Structures are given as structure tokens and as C-alpha cells.
Figure (cartoon, helix red, strand yellow):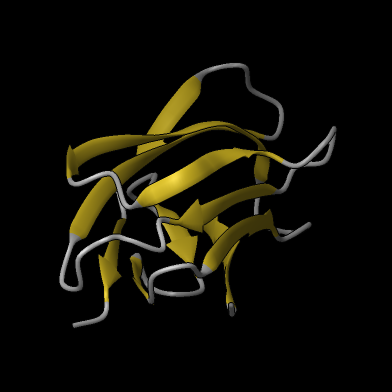
Length: 110
């Protein structure tokens, strides 16, 4: 199944993450979603990725890939089409230990 990469490209003036998918990822059942931090983004680390609302579209993860700064989740192959999950990325900026939150969404293609 395809991989749907999401790159954290930076932090805007309001403290929100700038994501390569503009904060809305469209997936198909069974896809893999990966989150990567661009080196010049200003983000030091993803602390967690958790569901905040809607249906949990993942059958596995999201979880950290080894000791890297990358995270990966597998979309449930049995998830109904049209399902939607709002989730929170908990992250820290470079030079800070304060955890900040950004809330994008994942939509299973109809």
C-alpha cells in the first residue's frame, strides 16, 4: 500500500506547524502515513501523535520509528471510506522543552 509522507516544514507566526499536506491528509485503507521533521523547520522533536476527535483510522501506531525523529502509522485496512480523524501532534521547538500542540486531520478517501 502507498506511503503518505507528511513533512513538518516549519512553524508559522501563530505557533502552528507548517505541514507539507497543509494539515489535511487523504488516505486509503491500508496506507502508511509517515511524519518527518525537516532539518530547518525549527522543530526539535515529535513527542506524541494522538487522536483528538473522530474515528481512530489507524490499526497500528502512530509511533516513533526506532530512535529517529520520524513517526509512522498504518491506516486500518477495514476502516470505512469517508472516516475522518482529527489528531494532535505534540512537539517541541529547538532550544525549548515546552510541549506545543498542532491539530491536523486525516480523511479516508470515499
